[in-house]
Length: 113
Length: 112
Image 1: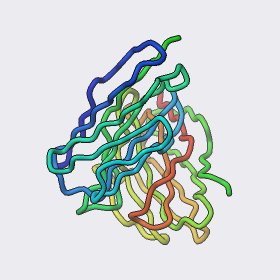
Image 2 (image 1 turned 135 degrees about the vertical axis):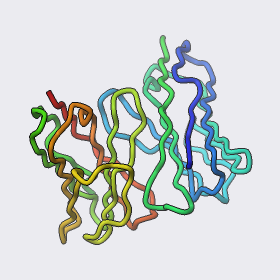
Image 3 (image 1 turned 135 degrees about the horizontal axis):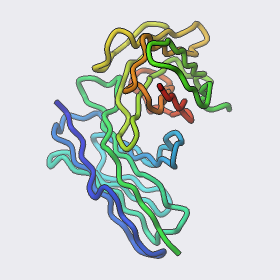
Image 4 (image 1 turned 90 degrees about the horizontal axis):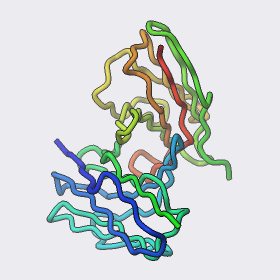
């Protein structure tokens, strides 16, 4: 059974810091992995999607890497800003059940001025 | 291009009642997936509808049911509501069953 874990559960940093959020998964047979952002009480905004054949994806100040064999992904946020404050969720799409996403419990990030 | 929309935004129901949540998929998308997100948790997959048929289901009891209409909008129905059904219900649409999913804003259900 695929399980997704995110560490740390919460993070509070001053503005300008570079951050690394971690995601690990127990079954390497994934179709893709996706990082989302969620503001309090809101829906999910997709940040980056990495196909199983890819090693990383970049969008602006965000970079996500994928090491399928070790069951790990990291989301790197450069030069953090207060507007980055949100919960970041990692989700994997299993190869055997491509209909669903399996989510971690998220990392709650606060960036203070 | 209109994104995924959900209605209502908030809902309060009493234990034992029934509820229907609605989702309009993004233009060009034929697949809708539903997720339940309890407070402080990640979303849990309920089921997926692809071209009006249920295409996959998570570990939810039969009192959670759904429909997809010819225009690919969808409903989630929950019967015999329990206190633990209180959650944010998220709908996501995609171009096909295994394509990237785009999420709506969610419906916050409170069961008292």
